[in-house]
Image (cartoon, rainbow, N blue to C red):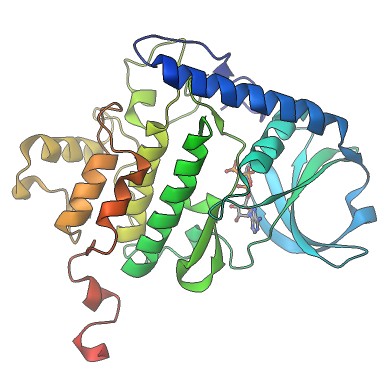
Length: 337
Ligand SMILES: Nc1ncnc2c1ncn2[C@@H]1O[C@H](COP(=O)(O)OP(=O)(O)OP(=O)(O)O)[C@@H](O)[C@H]1O
């Protein structure tokens, strides 16, 4: 990442024939055109005002690298809303409008936080409003070394996969799946939604990784073979991140720090186990996962992007046991009957 949101981490939409089919290229171009139209219209309708003139701040809901999100109420109507504020020092007008418009374009899906159609420009920054999640985000619910109860993990898997499928069906790649961006609206994860579309881009956008990889970064983005001009982004990047997220939800561990075999022994162990298929090569953090979870994660975490399972791969695995002894671990075993 460069220091500024919206700054060119990507280059213009461009076609590398070995990476993208014509159909995939068309999908990405259509998404880019639709967003450009929306961006021009939204740019003309930004409300210029001070936040406190329109809204009363109740409390802070969260803080990211770029944005501060506060719970506000509308001064006249009292409606509670989440206001994301981005400072002009770190966010370009274009970067703000892009995030705002992607949120507007996707927000009708039940698995995606609804963005309201009001964009603000203050002397120091930009802001937009969305529905507030009063239960916080998923990171607060993941217990280290344990993860989430299996039922909650499966509810998350189903809803997040559905939301990602929607994003992909609109020709976009989300690119920022992590627990901090999954907001919880009902206890037990019965209703969760994706937020933060600052990194979402049309399929086929050329992307270079500018910062260090994180566990959710797909290996094709960080290997030594990654071309200097970048890689045309594909939904398979989100499928990889979904695999890593599900692993975290089920175990309370990251499977690795970065998917670089030369630098990360946990990732190398995972590759060795994939190659041998032998139970004795199973890496320690994978202990406790069921054969169904192995099958699902094995599909989503295929290092070869063209062979990787789609995010919808979770569906046939829902309802099967994902943790060995899941009932006992979740307190629903014999003693609880
Ligand atoms: N609608 C909302 N309701 C409740 N909390 C929210 C909402 N939107 C965001 N948050 C909280 O604020 C945090 C930061 O928001 P967000 O991820 O949008 O900021 P960001 O600066 O773009 O983050 P990043 O560092 O990932 O780029 C989230 O992790 C979440 O905890």
